[in-house]
Image (cartoon, rainbow, N blue to C red; front, side, top):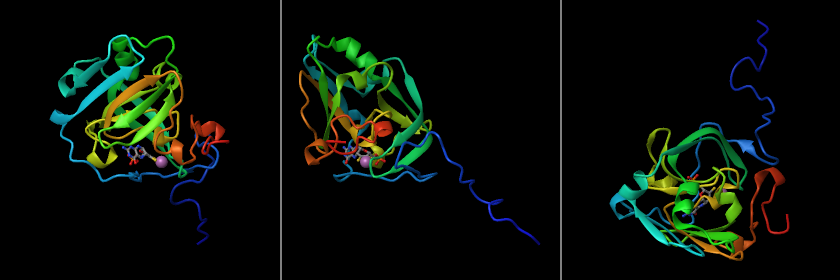
Length: 201
Ligand SMILES: Nc1nc2c(c(=O)[nH]1)N[C@H]1C(S)=C(S)[C@@H](COP(=O)(O)O)O[C@H]1N2
Ligand SMILES: [Mo]
């Protein structure tokens, strides 16, 4: 009758994929929105890239879906300390959109803005190199509205507040222009592995 605790349930081994100060949310996917989930139909969704680019361009749902598909399978990390492992998103690589507009050499940063008005600022380098997407799908299904559907920005190697839900566009700049959370004391870059939570970290 010597039942050893630990033979049942999730093994609590240290996960090397967990950045400092984070915990594994398991199957939960918390919803974090500063605004009310908008009623945004795919047919009303557009994505624009402008600012310091050669050819500013706006894609609608059909035009964005005509681009080569690209997916992400990996982890996401929220600054409120939950991480989620092995998520799958489908969409289009931001490299594809950026190649179409032709960023100026002077462009160093981007402000991502949502159809709701939410903004997040990022170094442009973090949006290139196959590390950022416009995501339409989660786990092979349309992205749920509360998680940013019909489309969100996905920059999974940075804290998740950079991944603007209901993404409407990117404006490329030659300087950092703090977005919603960055104006409220959060870090300009937000690399979870360096625990860049707040400005000054
Ligand atoms: N438009 C918009 N995008 C947003 C947010 C938001 O409040 N509004 N919150 C950010 C934060 S802090 C996180 S952790 C993730 C949460 O995404 P989720 O609700 O799909 O988990 O979205 C990010 N993108
Ligand atoms: Mo977050």
